[in-house]
Image 1 (spheres, rainbow, N blue to C red):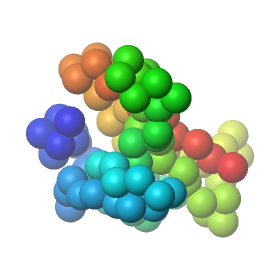
Image 2: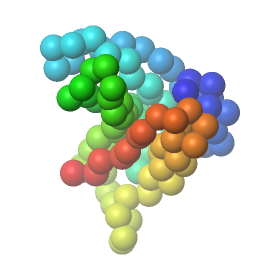
Image 3: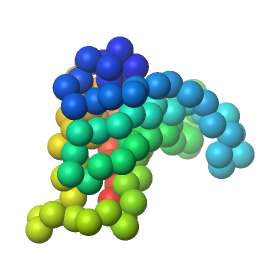
Image 4: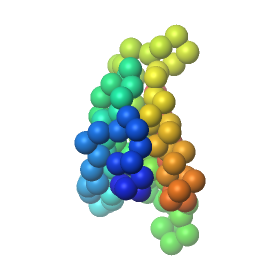
Length: 98
């Protein structure tokens, strides 16, 4: 997933890390996206209800403090990343804008 992320146009400073947030150690992928709603994007692995069979999903929560476009925030690079992970890696990913 990190290699796909690094190869995606509009992505810079891609990195893989781990977090203990939520009381469990899990991976995350983080990057800067060339989007009007600029800022760091962080996709955290969500804790699956069934840890053996999944489903496993990465989710990015984009701040509601960003100035949205008329029809919502400009998250085209983040959405492209999520689509590539699904098609090239078989991993689910979504962007949540509260």
